[in-house]
Image 1 (cartoon, rainbow, N blue to C red):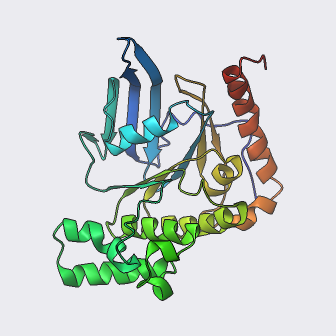
Image 2 (cartoon, one colour):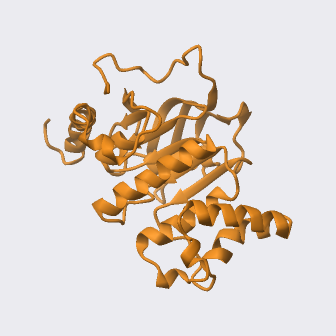
Length: 279
């Protein structure tokens, strides 16, 4: 099994056999401050996300990773540059994009089943279609024995399964994940990673994951983008070359250490900049 080589692709040029699903060109994000000045949080960023790939983003704290995701989700417009999904400019949350955040977003007064069905009911989907989609998502995410339970009765990992299932029923073509397993222990994170990879293969969706965990990024992704300290920009994009049918056992592959070492080599320098320490 081959891991990332020294000849890492730039991630900015599309191979002839791959189509662009979402794209950022010259994107920056500046937030106004009460003083009248602006906080330059992101960019300029260029990124091509290819149809059906799994792309992870790592970077030091405060570098704009979540801001990048918000731009792709249509939750935060770029200050400069363009963001497109399926060839159309992103203006508000695009149809076909699903987002899962780190925070538990389940409604405590609803059962698992009703939480998963919530978005479909708000969209006015027919009850028969809701039943079919919810049955599938609950079964797929291993929630069948818990569908009548309330979030307070579930573990953190199970609650995140509920949030992922609620996104899954909307049948997104692009799934954006903002540190969804950040609050979980290492063992649970690895197992949830297996579920996420299974979801990715089953749906054929394009996935972008924001994470602080280098092992998680290396295990899950086809490509990993490493961001600089704020204002965040890509300083390296590492191709893992893992097979599509991978799971958490990939961490024992001899090449896994090479991938994480390359990520840390770049990230360490940027993290030290934040601390005011020379690399």
